[in-house]
Length: 282
Image (cartoon, rainbow, N blue to C red; front, side, top):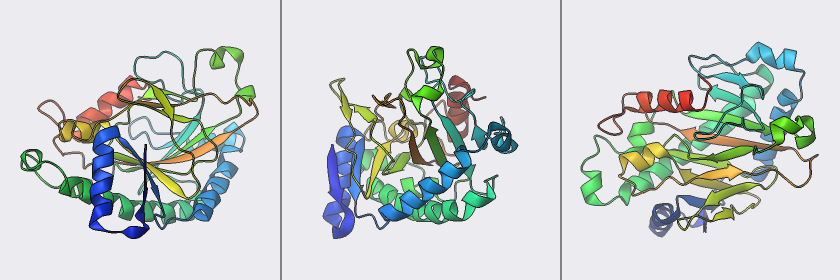
């Protein structure tokens, strides 16, 4: 898996990033300008929310129409093709939607910085598309996502395994094998290892766990709109060997505007709704 230092900030960096995502669907970026200390502060802040009693968190319970808010472990998600729920709790924060007051300021700060970074990355990806694909697009990739209300700031909390029943844990993963829905996902360095990606030859490989890094992966919407030039690969978060270990991560999921056409059969809106139904959160 390619690791790219962004401090160079040259045209070679842009080309290297686009080529790496084309080849494997995953890239690790370092020196992005978003510091490790900022992400650690974000995670510490959100742990305060997830540590609250269920009754307190339920005041932020997700809206089934918008899927915004707190998704408890009793709902969680079920990956397409699987029957067991993932071993996690989730908070979906969309711009303009509900966010716990104690978490809002720091979340908005990181969200805006990730928006800027994602726009740059999508611009790079568009620049290095083959011309025959580029000419078929109604607008550049970065324009598709500009001001999209569907771009998601998603906090994932994976409680210690010993807080789940044996039945819940049996045959389940913290996040079962899945491909992301959106254009690209930005994953700032998480609190512990466990993320694995499936390679072209079908093998699971650990995603590098590096301080001060952001993992970028392409999603199904990007793969669909670029005719798989930027492929979407499956990934998962496996159970840790230490049953007392918790994990928290931010997945910044960059979505196109709802009306963007992805294929003959789907707009961004119709595809998103279909996937949410498959994941059993709607």
